[in-house]
Structures are given as C-alpha cells and as structure tokens.
Image (cartoon, rainbow, N blue to C red):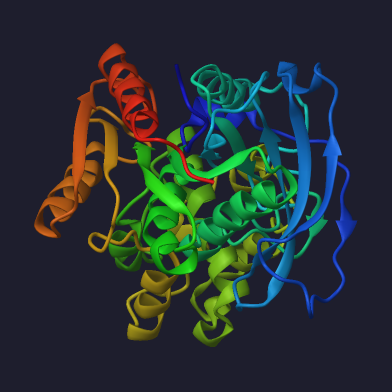
Length: 385
C-alpha cells in the first residue's frame, strides 16, 4: 500500500479537488475545539458508512481561533463501556488552497482511496476515526495552508478530536494518531503538543510513516547556485520548497521571505496559495531550486523562523511512538529517517522502529503487523470517557 505523500506518482494523482467552502469571517469569541456544525453523510460517502463532516474551531498560526473542517467516522453498533477510542488520521501533502485537504470531499482520487483504506482499517479495529483537512485546506478560506507548520497541523488534529467528542457522546477520551509523509510529521507534532494543549484527553501514542523531518536543517544551504537536475523528482522538490516558502511567508512576515526570492520565485510563490498539489506542480515544472532564489537562505532570522515553523521535536513525548520507515525512500530520503531515529534515541524517546525497503510510505507485512499490535495495546487498557 502507498500513502499519499511527497512522491511524484502520488502527487500526480492529487490534482483539482471539488469542495464546498465559504469565506471565514474574523474569529473573536470562538473556542478552539468547539463545533460549528455537523453534516451527517450518506453511507455511500467515500464508500464508508457512519461518516460526517465536522466544521469546528481550531487555534491558528497566530494563536487566534480559525474555522476548520474534518471528517468523522464512527463504527457501527454499540460503543464499548468506555466509549469508542479515537484514531486521528493526518493526511499527506495535498496543496495550499481551500478544498484541497481531501477529507471532507468525496473525490475518489488515488490519494483519497488510500486515506479511506486507513479509515476502514481502524473502523474495523473498533476505533472511531477523525481526519482533519488542516488549516486552509478544507471548507473555509482562511488564506494559504501553512504547509508543514507543525503547530497548526497539531491544533487542527487535537481540536478536531475535541469537537468530535463534544458532538458525539459515544466517543472516548482515549485516542491516538497516525499519519504518513506530511501527515507523519503532523502526527509527531500532535503527539508532542497534546501533553500541554489537551491534558484532559487520554493520549495513547503515535504511528508515523516516513515522516518529513530535518528539512529545516537542509533548506538553508540552498541558494541560486543549485542547478536544474532535470526530471520529475526535481520538479517535486521545487514544488515542496515553494510551498514551504509560501507558508513561511504567510506566518512569519518578519522574515521577509520575498527578499530571498528571484523574480521567478516570487511569481511562483505568489501564484500557488489557492491551488491544489497537481496545479502547483504544473506551475513549478521546469524550475530548479536555484531558479527560485536570489540569495542563500543562511541568515539567522530565516533559520530561526524555519525551525520554529516546521522542526520535529526529538524529545519530550509522553506516549509511545511507532516509527515506520523505508530506507529506500527517495521522497523523504532514507538517511533523514535514520537521523530522526538516532535523535529519538538520544532524546530518550519511547519508540520502536520497523524498517522496510519500499517506496515512500509503502507498508510491508511487518509494518502492518506492528500497526495491529499497536492498536491492540491501546485497546488492552480500558478506554476512558
């Protein structure tokens, strides 16, 4: 199985997404984690019974409440004594614009088919599943999605768990999170933040597959001298960097991201804020990393902002982590996964690694077995209301 992530094959499938959205008015007295509305869906929606669209309030990049959307699926039948445990699913890279998140739509695209398999897997295991679109990617126009901004990926996830529990009393306080690629990074950010952001919930752990990590350490060494390497993979890399720069520009105006960009880079970053991934890739086609930049990204201000924006914490987790990685991954290169595992070990993190030789986010039988064991351990201790 392949997860939607940064790989060219998957990105080519994530093109335009149709959605219903609205322009968000300024938020003032709304409480993050509270529901705006629930839209129950027919059993045919995404091919999964028991689904709803949930609009809710989350904490945005600047700390103010923002409107967001996500999907909720509840297993059939009667909930266990402590309520249905919750598995939060964080999706992979899908774009920057409203309607691109893929969780509150029913497109039938390759990426969503893979999302649906994860949802169905955990429903069959006896979990309710929540799946955030992330800030800016769902049913509300709140500006460009801050791509790989760890904090809002986490608040989008945690606040959806809270909103789902507020609207569905059969859901437990017990929960966990899973994600791959961007979603793997989001899952780790969620796991780290929940300890202080949602201590009222009963968090049991994280499953992360080929997560993005340590790009913030590599990106500053790039500059206008980087050549065009030709081929789809270079287009993909240029796309990801343009998306990061668009998100950083929106959330950290003090960095003056435009001052680092070439005219071609500014044109690209200016034009992608409301697009989904396939359209962004088409805009970036033929451009190298060097084509985007007018100077190297080595200033202290840029490094500090980028680290704050997207760095995966390597200590301070309070629940187990299952780290599933492919050493032959070329989208998030295998050495980055090895570095993350070494950082976890040095930071005293409670984690287990299962290593494969597949493509980006491909799960082998040993990985699926580890996921099954992880889910069983969560349910071995009674869930809590």
